[in-house]
Amino acid sequence: MASELGNVAQSVEEKSSSGLQRKLGLSAAIAISVGTTIGSGIFSSLGEVAAASGTALFAVLAFLIGGLVNIPANLCYAELATAYPENGGQYIYFREAGSRPLAFLCGWISFWATDTPSISIMAIATTSYLGYFVGFSDLTMKFIAVALILIFMFVHLRSVEGGGKFQTFITAFKIIMFAILIGVGFYYFSPDLISSPVKAGAPVGIMALVAGISATTWSFDGMASVCYMTGEIKNPKKTMPRALIISGILITLLYVLLSVVITGLLPMDTLATSGAPVSEAMKQLPGIGSAAGSLTAIMAIIVIIGSLSSCIMFQPRMEYAMAKNGLFFKSFEKVHPKWGTPHVSIIIQCAFAIILVFASSLSSLLGYFTIVALLKNFLTFGTVFVLRRKKSGYNPMWRMPMGYLMAAIAMVVTGTLIVSTFLWAPIPGIISAIVAVATGLPAYFYWERKNNKQEIV
Image 1 (cartoon, rainbow, N blue to C red):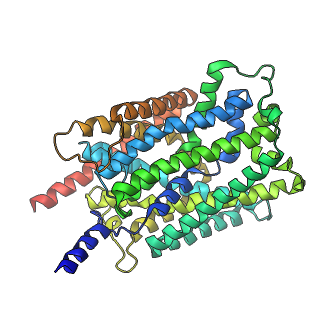
Image 2: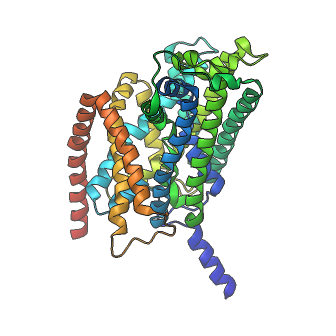
Image 3: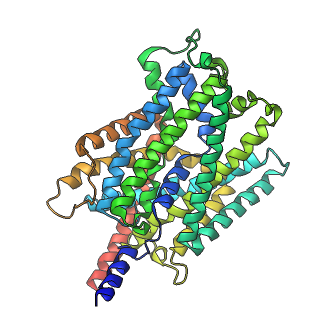
């Protein structure tokens, strides 16, 4: 009898409320978060941060403070994920906060304008670095990008466990590459470059530091991606907070150490104007010289492949969750009887990404939705205030310390980025918001009417 009860308890633990199996542990959860966050951006953002900061010391501090101010956001997601340990991420949090229209718009925008295009953009970015070694035509490179999408689609279709193991491997591999670069760089870097005085005309003072911190923001984006898959994470009460906190610390540590090494290998005037600071820094290492470009390209390919794999793995889970609630195409909620994955959602999202590979101008246009994506994050942190005031139904298995303060800090950080992005491109921001609402609300009311009719019948 006791063994039967134990089997029942194990079955409940292994199966999430979404109907998928809980097969991913802490290492896979960290790999999804870290693998999504550390992408191609770090190869150029070091130069952008240096240009904004003005001095090497401020550039390093910018990455340190930038990582620290992003920790409250991770704490918010950790609490929300343990309150609703199911697939869907932000969609679930808006839904439970009492706004089905906002929840739907979140998923609608993610599918059409942010998540799926990111798959095509990363596939194209991988082939662009591959072009460093081969002289294929643009069309051939697009077909290679399609092949990459299909390969990782197949990996994540066949098994969530297999996909998790691959994601863990590729993420560990790219961290090891950066660790080797950091280790070798520390051996040869010059402390004098880090402590060098401000160059003439460079930004100075606290405003320069703030500008540098702002420039690091996109380097930390993506850590909450694992929340899309909370319904497939083992023991989410312990795993989700640990995964999000460890990811934040690990990424911050990696960026800080990398910034110390790069600023210790390159003069600030070179670093601030370089479009490929990692490659420029590697050229300073003895024995590498002309091979720096090739090594950087290899690193970039592996780094972006890790992010591409992660996105194909977690992103289709939001539409799967929406379909289960009757707010998306019904076929998206299907789970493969043998593989145990939301195969239709994965296949259709990858198919859409493949179309975007051949519509590069459209992919660039969809980049205008950046401000809408930021607004989603801002409102997500706001759900903490709403949900914590609910009299019932909100029982997170883990509560962040100083909850309201942490949520407020996360909103201030994201709000600052929204304002700066809007000031940089106000018209695209307004147009994207109008398009999102104008297309999303009619679709929402269509599915709601359909749901109401089914309930009446």
